Image (cartoon, rainbow, N blue to C red; front, side, top):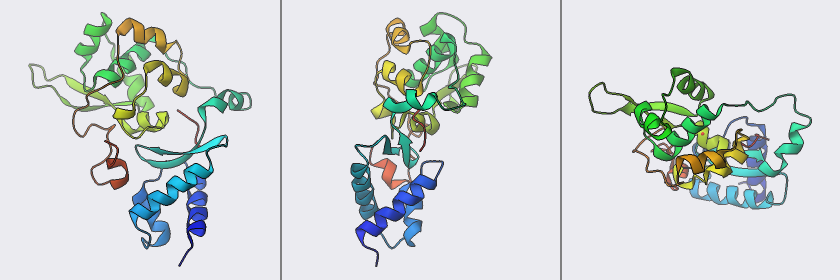
Length: 221
């Protein structure tokens, strides 16, 4: 039988080796499911606490647990990283902000807030980035598509659910977005209290017990 210290070392190694968040259900397979989910969560919390004063943190996101660089150190990493964060137009970021804080929402809803037409290109940019997706259709003539944010959006923010969505200006800092989303937040009068429809992509899957207890960023380590 593994000691708690040995189990945490195995968890640490597995999570550091993973490029994607790993849910508790998958982490249990490391131990042939001999360690219960509740015990595993306790070990993960202890592991997270052990890393609290380091440049890398253990985060519990919508898709699972992962190690990631703390946002405060991102500017230093950029100095040696060949990849630069993508730059998005103000129109793209305004659209993302409206979807994040008003989801699920249609292009017509977005246009009502912004006061201008939302082009298909803007929606396509956000879909290709993996931050939004179609989650249904409004039951009105024409059945317009309803858009919502995705698990990838929450993962990039290091969040588990939409209920943890921070003020818009904090999202800008975490995702390294320009132009300034704080100005956009003031212009659009958006608040960080979305009321998501049930089973939108941003919400934890019903069979993921770890994520369900809570109910599209930082660079993975």
